[in-house]
Image (cartoon, rainbow, N blue to C red; front, side, top):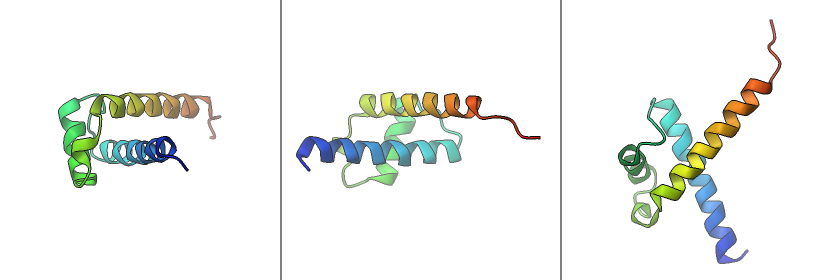
Length: 77
């Protein structure tokens, strides 16, 4: 695995972790200050290295994909 693959994998894990934390705590995933705080909580050792704008783009994309998938699921009664 090269460095780009490793970086992409770490960002993917971070997106999932931050999304889960934000969802559980009813935090706006587009709020840069709040996302910065979450990253500091979840990854204090590397939080200064995270590009928050890219992270937010990933969070928004994940949110959109999740909502699209839920909307397509059949409703069971």
